Image (cartoon, rainbow, N blue to C red; front, side):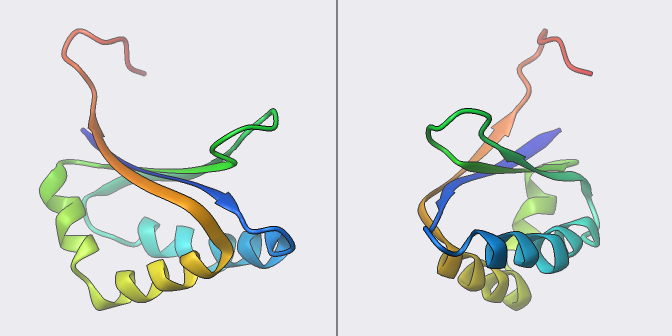
Length: 101
């Protein structure tokens, strides 16, 4: 299992538009992709960084690479950048022997 984490802050004054974009465009896009097993957005409970984390699970890195090469993904990423700052992405795997659900 591989995870793609996108961490960022929402630009001041754009929270409602961001939340609508994530709910109506970003999450449905990821949930339709072959090989993607999960997708959720996490919100920071206390004031800190990152304010939001999108966690996308996939069978393997190849499945994520296929999605990231799509022109539609690049367009969606471009729109996400309108609402965000301090954005970072990371690919993660669960270490052998870790406790996982």
